[in-house]
Length: 444
Image (cartoon, rainbow, N blue to C red):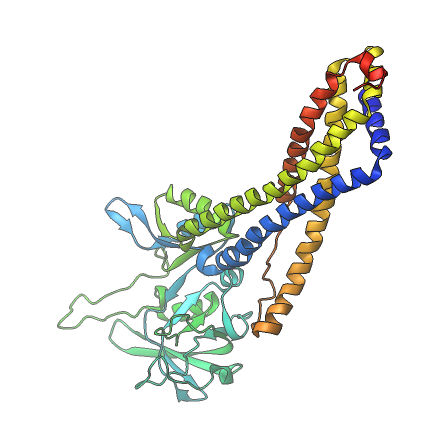
């Protein structure tokens, strides 16, 4: 008996008792939908809580503290190291923050402001990494800068909890940065550089931290270095009686070193792989994502538990499949007798009934999966409105209470199929044991 003939025979038999078939498929669909919806809560919460956290730069960032050297650890990374880090797969950006190595006198509209650090950053990399702003935008021109949230901090008498004048009032204003350098004869030269404030950095998350820095791009840093003739604008120390040798900082032709380096991964799931690869090259690093392993493990265990509970619902639905197949064997005893009389092999008869139970399981899984997706969409759309209405709490726009990944739907389908085959196996074996003569006499 060909497979196509078996399928046709099964379909004809399934049409004979549509009501019973419908109820059996409905029970299977309900069990499958319950499994998917229940497990989707675990996936949704993990996506919204863990992935929302790890999507933040705090977790996707890998801090580089140095690289192994012959005499210990080299704390600074050279340009070759930066190029290597940027070449690693799934690295979105590599950022650095190097301080201008002298205090630049800052003023706006001729009024001096509290001097803070002037920090050189790569704004192209920071744009990819997600430099957080409280107002304005990131620089797009060479003479544009971002200032710290506390840029208007007074020189004295400031406490982290004090209210400061809004830094947003300085957006669009021109800031003057005055650098100085000593000649070999001890004469000090000065030069002012004008930059435009276009962005305000986000407020530090830790209340005791203050940020009154000025963040400049590579072009502005190159202007300062062009004036000083030294890396990062460092000042020369001319010889005197106490220091007859003086101090000549690294020149522009010397190998450049970078500090406060962060490697930003495309996603938190790549952080581990990136960390292992660059550790293998001798880099010393740290990532907050390493501390989230236990959280992910907790959600993994929770999802397994929810799938297990949902599987119980499918097992309950298997009772209906077993009952349906048992009755099908009883009702089709004469057909089975005829098939045996014309030489049908018992395995072919068993396969027919297993095929019918499998079709019931798959049909229930398809309907249940479709229903589960509809419920998931409704929950994600309606539950935030309920929370906002009754609890007066704002739910983030991208927060998802339910998420059904493709492999969850596939897993539920496999579970439903396995349970259906298990439920139909005993009635199928019973069908192969029916006596031909008694079946033809309909004497069971």
